[in-house]
Image (tube, helix red, strand yellow):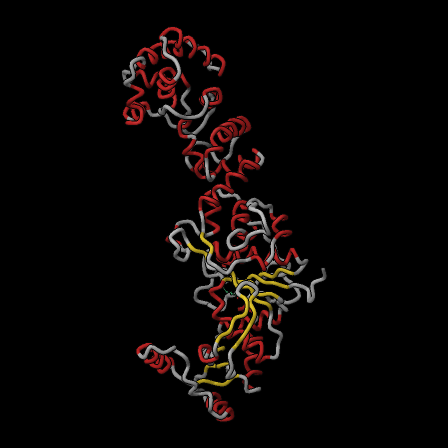
Length: 503
Ligand code: GLU
C-alpha cells in the first residue's frame, strides 16, 4: 500500500527537564509510525521558553532516546533538509509569518496591558464565565495600530478566530469540535516579541511538512488554535493523534510523586531498554486480537497502528514493567548482563570498577546465581549480600532464625559440621561439601530441614537461599580473590559463628 503523501512525523520535546515516560511513549509512537510507513522521523527541540530550556537537557534527551533504541532522520544533531531543528534558531521565520498574518488581516495588534488582561480574567472567574479575551483590540483600525506600534507602544499579536466552531479529526479521539468562543483570539506573539508555542508549532509543522502530529492529549485543547492558524495561513491541516494521559496506580496523573518516571531513573535502576520500549508500546496501544505482550522493536514496527491506540487513560503498572524486564534479562546474553551489572556491584563496594579476568568470571557466577530473582539489575548486590557480607551476630540475633537455632538437633548439627569444616585443609568443593553434610547427617541423625537449616544459617546467615551446590564454590573461589570487601570462606564463616559460642 502506497502512502501518499509520504509520512513525516516529529517528536518535539522542550528541553526543560528529564525525559519522562509520557514523552518517551510519544517519541516511540512517532518512531513506530514513521518506520512502519517508511516515512521520516524528525526530532525538533522546542526551546522557546528560554528561561527553562537548558542545553544539558537536550543532551540528556538525545542520549535517553538513543538508549531506548530510537533514531531520527532529521534533527539538531543529524541535520536535514527542513532545519534548523531548534526553535531558537527559527525566530526570523516566526516573525515573518506573523507580519504576513497582520498584513492579511488574519491577525491584529493587541495593546491590552498584562494588568488589564489579568483584571478581566479575575472578573470572569468571579462571574464563573470562561476567561476569554474581550476582543477589545479586534476593532482597532490596522493603520492606526501600526502607527501606535511604530511609536513604541507595546503590542502583542493576536490571531483572529473566525466566528464558527473549529473542527478537526483526531485518529484516536475521532471528530473533535471546539466553539470559537472558548478558543477566543489567542496571542501568537507576546508584546516582548516572543512567539508562543501554539503559533510556532504550526509554522514548524507546516514548514517541516509534517503529515501526522502524534503527541500527548494535554495538547488536545491547544489543537483548535493550531487548526485556526493552518486555516488562516491557507495550509493543509495535518492528521492528529492525541495519546491518552498516563496515570499512576492511584489513578492520578503520573508524576514524580509516583516514584521513578524518567527514563534516566529506569536506566539507573537497571531496567533494560527493550523492556521499557515494550512496556511503553503497550501503554494505550494493544495489538490486533490476541493477548500477546512481548514484542521486539521490529515486531512493534510491524504490528503498530494508530487506529488501535485507545483514548482512555493508561495506568502505569510497575509490576508489569518488572515482569517484562525479567523476561528480557533472561533472554540476554550473560556477557551483556555482566557488563550492565558490574557497576551496581562496584557501587556497593563489593568489587573494583575494573575487573580482571578471574574476578569477572567469578562475578558472572554470582550474577547467574541471583539474577533469576531480581526485577531490576539494581537489586543484584542486595540479593548477593550473603556472599559479600557475613555477620554471624546478626544471624544469631535474627528473629527469623530463632526457631531453627532453638531446634532440638541444631547444636549437635552445628558442632559436627564445624568440626568437619575446620578439619579441611583446602577450598571445599561442592562434592566435598555434600559429603560433609552427609557425614553430619549420619552422626547426628538429623535430616531434611533440621539438618540443612542450621548449616545454612551458619554459612549464609539465613535459613533460605540458593542451592549449596552453586553457592559453596562461589564462596570458596571468591575468598581467594583480592576484592575490596573480602569474601569469607566457608571455614572463616564457621569460625566466626563458633566464636560467638554456638556449637
Ligand atoms: N514542546 C511540546 C511539548 O513538549 C510539544 C507539543 C507538540 O508535540 O506539539 O509538550
